[in-house]
Amino acid sequence: MVDSPKTILLVEDNEDNRIIYATALRFAGYEVVEAVTGTEGVQCARTARPDLVLMDISVPELDGWEATAVIKADPLTRHIPIIAVTAHALPGDEQRSIAAGCDGYLAKPIPPAKLLAEIDRRFARTSPSYTPVSHQAHRHRTEPD
Ligand code: MN
Image (cartoon, rainbow, N blue to C red):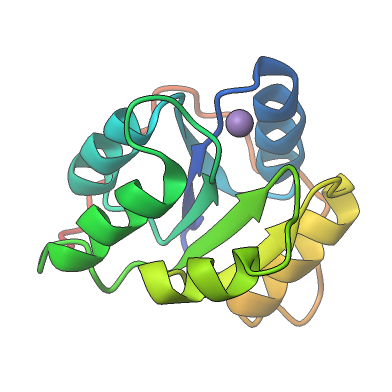
């Protein structure tokens, strides 16, 4: 990417899914912050100020809809786009996600390529980059938000 890497907050309690999505996102050049519960997700949104949140709806403590409502009620984080991810897509899940303040909605199963295509589209990446950025495991953000 030309710009500095975008940061994605991944809120997902299923370890396998978290590893798959985080690995795919990092491979595509995104920085990933991982949270396991809705409460952690809210905290990470405040501290990491991600460019986008990928929010599993079925997570412990606060569920994804509740966590979204908290993030969207906070002036510090309300601008951050949130894409809801549901495991058992039920009729009404999409409407409920939008009502909670989510900006988008994906139903599992989500192949990594589909996830990347959706996120690339949101950042208006015209050519998906599958070239990993150089690994800077402890890179610190230096730009003010
Ligand atoms: Mn889950």
